[in-house]
Image 1 (tube, rainbow, N blue to C red):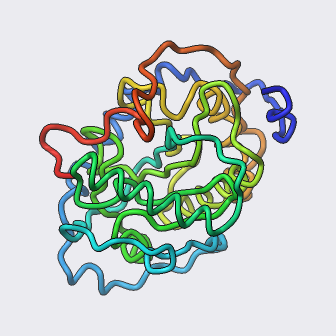
Image 2: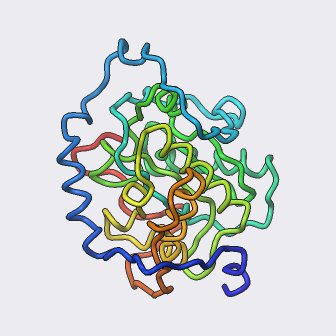
Length: 272
């Protein structure tokens, strides 16, 4: 793990948030503030032009490009997210960093979600391979993001109505993602924060901040403060707001029970 960490910047500053108090109470307050925004948007809302933004959108491969199956039902367009949820996919840490592997990853994930989990489609809105390729997940995700909206996903149980999920290929319990994935994740999150007008220090969270799960892995979760810092820096934020690094700690939270199990993804009153 030490070798993987060397790829990342270890800058620290005196300002360290209380990550425990930044957990569910903070999220519930934010969710309450936007409760009305989780209502479904009509087709007329999708005719709105997206505002111009300064940050460059990453190359996102479409469902047509990676060969997606048709969903069993179309995704519902909902209001813009207030949090961006970082996941690990709980797939093997492949050393195949090719685009063809990334496309196969998206197909394998969709097959798992539809055929094993019984969902209508891929659960997450976006997927990033270990080679750093960013791909559309659930149908209509890019359409919605382009209009400043979101789609109802199946990635964070009971919170899908106000969150957007990013699945990162691999399992990061004790190792960190490769640099290519990390850089793509920073770029993707910067694009989304810019597009939605979100503060990276408040909006970027891990799956475990909402549900009882090890996801996005103990190692990657410990790097979320740096991830927020890197995204904020990409957006031109002052380094005075930087969060201090947190140590790697074994959480003993529930880990993957099988390939692709990153923890609770759909609540009892949510569709999949």
